[in-house]
Length: 229
Length: 229
DNA sequence: AATAATTTTTAGATTAGTCTAAAAATTAAA
DNA sequence: TTTAATTTTTAGACTAATCTAAAAATTATT
Image 1 (tube, rainbow over the protein chains, first blue to last red):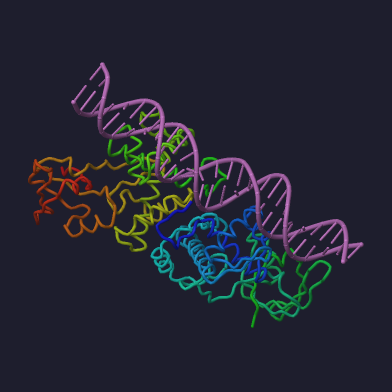
Image 2 (cartoon, helix red, strand yellow):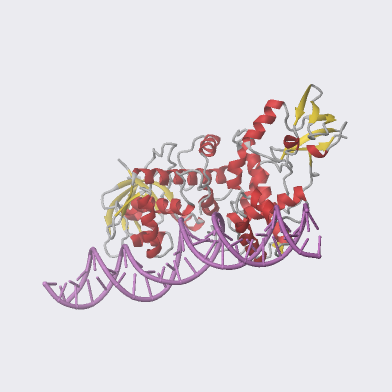
């Protein structure tokens, strides 16, 4: 079902969601994405994904060869980024202007991200004073789809000897935040990975060049950080 | 295509648009609505309308008997009013907060009216300070679907010597709104009917006690007004 | 290299929404 | 009141998106 069939440039909501999913998988997992990975992310079946990949390839939104996985074309990436931009701007709007809590915004933003109006997006951006990061700490692409701030990763994904900056959390529960407080881990602090224990993926890290602590993999999977360069 | 299939109370965009169209036709034309009238309003074919009417009747959203026309059930009316409420609140938001012109908002509001989140609507209403009328002068139903402001009449229904206040339009197309702008007809302005030409039902009117213009019946049928008392 | 396990694709069916063309019902006119 | 015109409904077909089950291709393991 097309919402706006009069413009040939239009994608359906579903197509937009597939492009967004592929973009996010590339961001996390690497450059070529498998059918199964998409199926899992979209909570659908591999057969449905194959069908959609053919359609997206016909429209030149992805590079796709049977059994060989998927990458985005520049056209496809542009659309994915515009959806992400809209999603994050709307999240910002919901939190800043309508006083939603951080954990209430996602579902609504999933709907709002598909509203199609360039003027709407640009005016919203202006209304919010051109924010660079959304309420979850994720960067907001600009009107040209450019990300000025690097995307954060899970602390659990970094390697031995990496030095990074803490940028956010996945679990926002007060219990977890209190644990971080106690451990001396705060937004913006430096985390140097001294060692990764092979057996349980726990980390030995130095916080702010001051004190050494151990962090379980469960905790590391709930901390966001970027590489310090 | 269902956007949110987890809730059994959900309608598709299309179903919502049919309910809204039927509500508006009842408002203008009378109590029982024909298949053709809906087809014209929805810019689709009568056969498609019949298909949809069956589906809406199955869901108890309309009263429908073959060849006998359609009315809304209270459930159907409730949904129609909630869509209209959302449409008009979003129009208000676009004009007041994002500085859209009144003839630019309709198309975007047509999309936004289908966003499904009770919290979003209530917070938006609050953010806009609970407006009672939208930028086109149409009343905004409250959270319970109640309209507090009296409904306007078509300008074409008034008589010689009536003095009325312009409250809104039927045709929201930017072409028509631009015509009104040019004619000096705006929300809230006074329209005094000097003469009704019998032959074609066109009107000679004075706008704001300032200038006299002629209005065709076609135009008069698209202007809403209330009697000035 | 041959076999087993896994992943991916095809084949065929389903649903919502749409269409055209033809049939049936209603309304208007002679 | 029978015929003509109009409106409405059915019948059958199409597309986008989905599914299950089976076939084909790829990858991993003896």
